[in-house]
Length: 164
Image 1 (cartoon, rainbow, N blue to C red):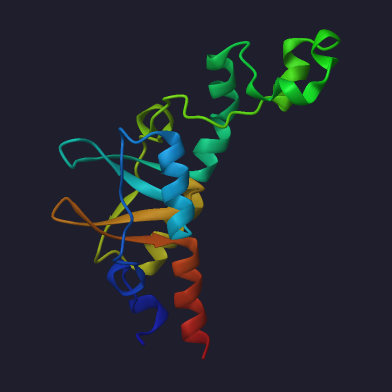
Image 2 (cartoon, rainbow, N blue to C red; image 1 turned 180 degrees about the horizontal axis):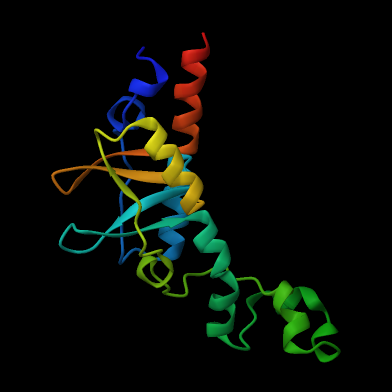
């Protein structure tokens, strides 16, 4: 393996990028991320253009928003057994259970700020970008197309392999 300072995005990236589309529902997104054992993915629009990234954090951060959209409809109210008369909407929200698809899409929750690096970017620059941006993944590109992804785990694997 190369010396640490010589490593590039191409050396440490995962070329098997799971891509998602902006018109997928959040339910479909969660299933895809879980199926692949990943916490986030680049997002493409209908034309195949990179329009953002989405992660489990985006799903969680927007869960309260989805509940607000559904208004007073509480699928899980059956479990409250009379408490709904004693509590206001704010106190009921933690009991809100949604087991169906509410139609919210990836486009509704994605992060449009995309941190990309060329495949020739050195590991120090990638680390600095991830630290300064407080992010967990970089999209690796070649000629404007997605060719890989570098996650914090990929960076740790590279570091660990050099320790041997």
